[in-house]
Length: 88
Image (cartoon, rainbow, N blue to C red; front, side, top):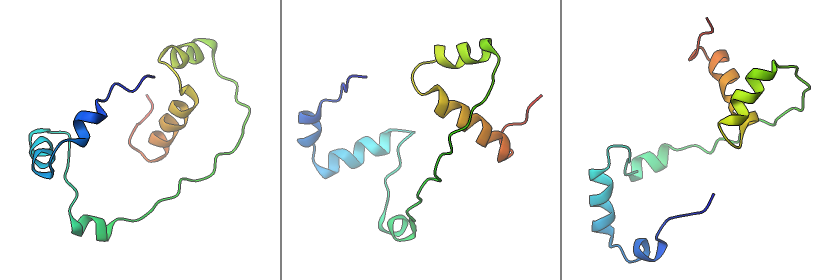
């Protein structure tokens, strides 16, 4: 995937312009010193190679959504494990 960011424009922004842009973006959060003090580095667990048989239509559906289908399988299984997604 090609990076479409205009990094030259971003580098020219002042701190005040960046804070203003973050304040106007509902999905962005400006991290403060308190947040940084409480932040913890989390190292993801190691992956284990497994052989798994899945229905062909399920694999096709996952692959059709783009690269990273194995990562999406892992995320779906984790959501079920964590109780955030309940199978029907």
